Amino acid sequence: MQIKSLYIALAVAAATATSFIACGPDAGWNKILANEEQANRIFQDSLPYTVKQFQEFSPYFSGQANEMDSTTFTATYPLFNAEIQQLVKNALFIDGEDSVNQVAESFLGGFNEYAEDEIASGNSAFHCWFKNQDARVLLNTGRFLTIANSLSEYTGGAHGMEVELWFNYDIKNKKQLALTDFIQDTVSLKKIVEQHFRKVESLQENDSFGSGYFFDDNKFTMADNFGMTREGLVFHYNVYEIKAYSEGSTTVVVPYKDLKGLLTETGNQLVSSLFKK
Image 1 (cartoon, one colour):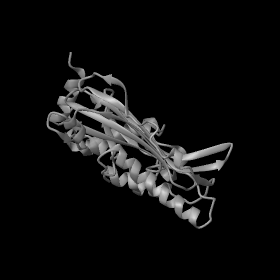
Image 2 (tube, rainbow, N blue to C red):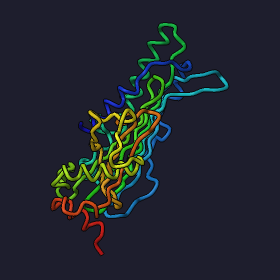
Image 3 (cartoon, rainbow, N blue to C red):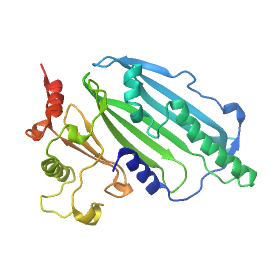
Image 4 (tube, rainbow, N blue to C red):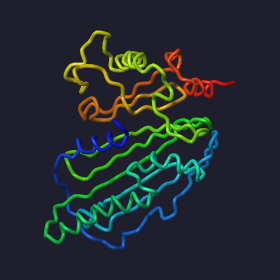
């Protein structure tokens, strides 16, 4: 399953219907509160970048005069030089947008149309939405870069959608990396990841996964969502992916020492860049 397909599948799974508090228009609030995208600080690891913050509100508010709420979109994301920014754009704007402004326009535009239709029909019982994204640099060696984008969204239903997507890049060769760029023996890797998964979940070697997990035919499956960190290769299962919503997400870290003999040339270069003196 590809990253974008995973995001869509989890969003659909989260969308069970309900209703919330009423909203009403207030054009005076139709503005970007964080009008200038602010750089909190400059991070100097190997690739310099700044961290940008963005927030925008819908003009339609909810609640009573003494307790109001609004639909918002907020984003935090790294900003590199133009060449690197183009390379990592799919990690920051996962639906193919070109900028944070386009994300805000799409999300808030959808809500505004919904709110206006409800108001026109005389229905005051519609709810407000929210969308938050927090893209963070988790590994930055100069040659290799990992970004994790945590997204949470509510557009109706029993609860919202939460997902964290990992993206890995080879800066030297200007490409996004697949697992097979690091690992030459994915069959052996799967066995090693399962061992660490069972340890995280407190399962014995021969314990059945049973009804508590969503593995097909009760057989372990590696997460498509993976990332590079200094501690090891990370596999991240999002909410709903392998367990019930109430169980939350699951993260498995496989130390690089456990991958000896499985790494490709690129994988060995990654490890060397992490542990060079």
